[in-house]
Length: 172
Image: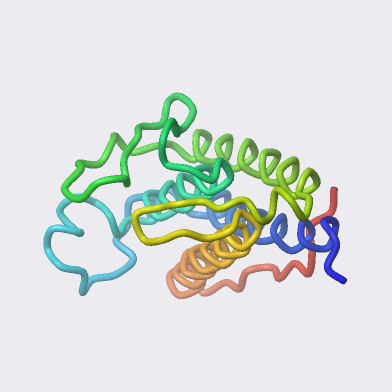
């Protein structure tokens, strides 16, 4: 049987590895493009930059913890970007800002996972892309965080010729 603690340890370590990528990114790569072959509008708008992929990941982690788009707003100083096509990017967020957002999302995730019951996990959540039970949404979100953490860490490994430290599970 999967327990809240088991789920937290795996979700938490995914967030920790994202934090490692944000923490260990050299200043000269913070605004680097991760993909050279993105369509021009993505490159021009900055959607494929290192810092932005970190922001994108944290934004959706935070949003999916709420279970609904309606009424969601990221904490200051972050902007409500990502919800609609054609939105322009906010300013470049600093490492400290994204690490702070990561710590906030980590705590919110831990609280949400430990509070998860069979009833709350079954609550339907509707998004533009479909409806999903809240518990499954959290697994979807975990995969999203790990996917982008891996992309960022792989990019750093290719540019810095250094390997990321593998973590097996989150601690506290």
